[in-house]
View 1 (tube, one colour):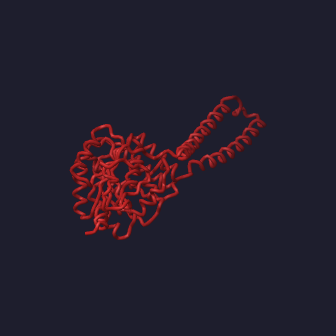
View 2 (cartoon, one colour; view 1 turned 120 degrees about the vertical axis):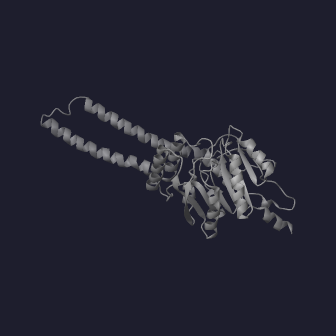
View 3 (cartoon, helix red, strand yellow; view 1 turned 180 degrees about the vertical axis):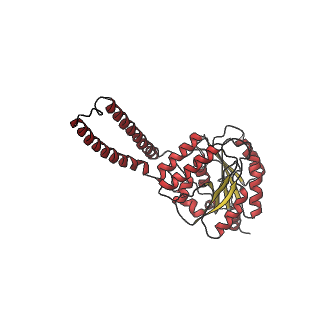
Length: 342
């Protein structure tokens, strides 16, 4: 076998990206199930785990597993940058022809990857998993998730599938297109819809979390909702215009009613109470819309500063050089990070 063929054989067909944040309770089982599924598919694969500033033993567990299985690769962030940027980093480093994103908690079954690959081989370039049922989640979480997805569906400029999370397979062409999108406040499932290409959904039953606690409490969900809305919709900005016209019309009507009332001797509109209520109401509305403008402006400011999306402390399993291979075998790396090899 010549060196060129050997290099090609080592390039994975399937890359699986897993963001990791304080997931020591699930890492061993995650690797076991993932390896069993991917080995059964019979194609070369890599498991790219992005340690997003974990405070527990997640990193040491990942590195110990890597000693046993070199197909497990680890990107270690310098601090916690968040799930969306961890997914971004995984996509920047992934080398596979098909790239799968999945959470570490095993609520999304790795066994569904085989069905996703079947759709990919049929010609679909994005295969997203749709949650037909969500076991083990509170009533509050179910209601807020339902409102979140339906709100996005109604007000965003992109057709974002309802009840579809981060769990999806993307063709390399899609991944390369998404690598060009470097905005800081990211909503990855929205971006994967925005780039287009042939897309299809697969329904599945979402299981309970295997172990540990959720990493998406209410405050993070609200932040993600803001990022999603501001990234894909101008409706909040337009609301200020619509509301301005409404209040202007209401004010004109109020002037007419007040003049008529005073001419007729009606004292209902006399005094400071009505004036104070009107001023407070208008002041509150103005502050709300100033806050909305501020959210958009802050995101513009973050992008204009051009800071890197994330900082990698060390990448384990990437950038190794083989004397038989030329530099073209190295993975593409938009992050610009080139650490020493393991």
